[in-house]
Image (cartoon, rainbow, N blue to C red; front, top):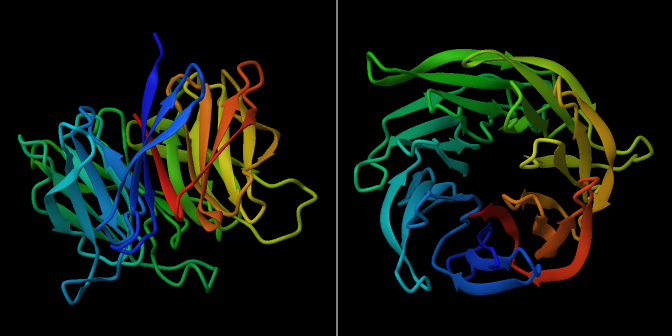
Length: 354
């Protein structure tokens, strides 16, 4: 029986343009089909789904909401015929340009990072499955050595631990990963730790290895991936960093996303400028990375990409060429191979696979 994956694409778009697209991917044949487009949302640049597939949470990455500085997080309910998204709830993010939204694994909390608002906000998930009003907002302060990009704090993502007790927030402007913990006695999120990274690196997104006691952060500004050890719950220690670019490359490039293969053997990272996916092999004992090559994304500015849960397919969203490109992952080497399938999607910025 064929296995089909439900794929959601968030994009940069005006309310009149397509902002969210739903596709289906047949994992046996590699057939990628566009199912439905959704309009009416300003810049739904990052989206996430709950486990049931009933609710889709999207940031509206804007700088003004109802005449006041700030963005919005909107929860949509997918109707039974799966051709209509109906707005079920919305909340202000209390900061401009929200760029990332995530549910904790137990679906008790929803976190949003405000890139331009120097803050991260956490919402409780109510019994209905919808987020309630803001539970807490953490403000980040400071700057980094890159005067153009690190003039202030810029939280770029928010990643919960597997047990949902910690929240890790890479901050591009501070060269730090800020860590928050849930205090069960106080029923409150509190500051817990801060992980320092090389000056000017610009940490962006973080991923935990599926079986090893390690994590990785992709650094947007100096085009590296840093390997972090998990010393104890909620505490990361930065280890070595490795470049995502070929040694011969001399142009301008920044990093965007990293993904670990489901089997934990391979890490992928996207380069915007070099317009490639960098491939790294993961040591099965230590988690250390070794470079294994690059593959062209066949488009401009690969902002986001993802790998199917069976590890067979990799989809890349090329923001500036408005293309979604499908690759098949070689089972032996982990290398993505272009399938010949490309879809036109306006300024895609996020790929979610369910």
